[in-house]
Image (cartoon, rainbow, N blue to C red):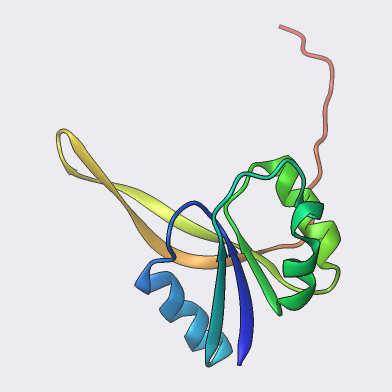
Length: 110
């Protein structure tokens, strides 16, 4: 059984879980639904997981990636679809593995 750490304020959708089960087989999901300043606050949870699935800003993503080492760190790719003029929904498309986070800057010139 694959142990998946789910770092998100939201419950994993059935489509997201189904895609993980298709890839990994049986899944034991552990959700962490709290605000952290650094991924190191979850070092024990990351160490206990086989896969780390996250919803986080880029800086925190980089920390999760570093702490996870060779373990997959994955993020859900979703599409925003309009239901009617005032309502939208997010539809899960697939899981993507984070491999590298790099910020490249240059001078801004108009």
